[in-house]
Length: 439
Image: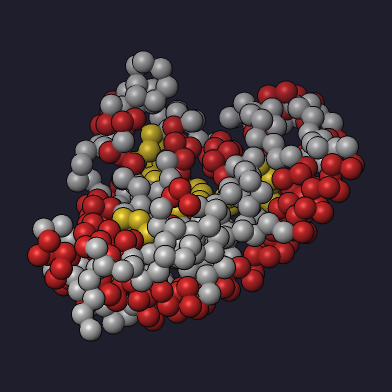
């Protein structure tokens, strides 16, 4: 029997709201009560003291995180953004230096360079995996390049072999933005531990969370101590600590509270199971959509596992005979919203973020002050291009090819996933309705 697409007035595949994603339970509640009853909500002091490194919950979370991920050091901060800033500062980045970054990521992955007066240089991403393309990175390395900020986009580790080879060849620091990939692995090692410094996110919509928060990991003793200093008013303690290299030792208040740390300790225990469910659900969803010519499920890099922060699919307009927007709008019309995210609409989206260099800060070359610092501070900074077309793969992914869904998160049952699969198959089968309707 022929069906009519919901976007054209037909009956949707499903109207019952999807389950929400909520990892907070009795364990976290008990942890918060424990901290409240202790009377110590934070124990950081911004001077050289035993409490310079924070209270017992923060230190316990750091120790447990380091042990779980196999890192020598873990430093808790109040957000992954703060962690990226601290990692760049700890690496000794100076004004006028260049840092190669991804254009296809959350804005902080690039503004971490700008905070220290460095100039972001955008390299294109891989067509198959959406992470920085090592070949494009090497084309952009100059004598001013001091670091690469890689991003484990959507949950997949970056090209470790390619980027690490470049770092060794050109003596560069590598900072890994692992906000979306805790629990993913490459060659048996956890994402986040694959570079000189790794940064995790504990923001509320990540795999596990503390509301807000982040963790920086490294095996380098000096880098770890410099991150701790930047976290907590470095300039106030370097004299008493006898720190000789005070480059970038202007500190911030990037400190995590005891309640956040206590919640984080409980959340960390749940991570392995949550990742396993995401992987199983993603595999099921990929298999269910594998017969749709022109829709390609996420690829997983050889030697890696995927943490599936979201699932990123490639859309081929030529094979499907219809544009991405019309197709995805029709799929969304077949499905309901999700609990706890009711105002976000159906959790399927087109593209990811507009390539960062197309945003106002880069197009107008204004960050700090009216004179355009750091973009106009010297001739080579002014020569860095932010023109449309510098990263054609990222632009193509954003404008035509990539779509993402969160509908494989824990809480989604097999019948829930079956409804998602049915919605895609229905639209695929009757997509000629969209062509004839002029959408």
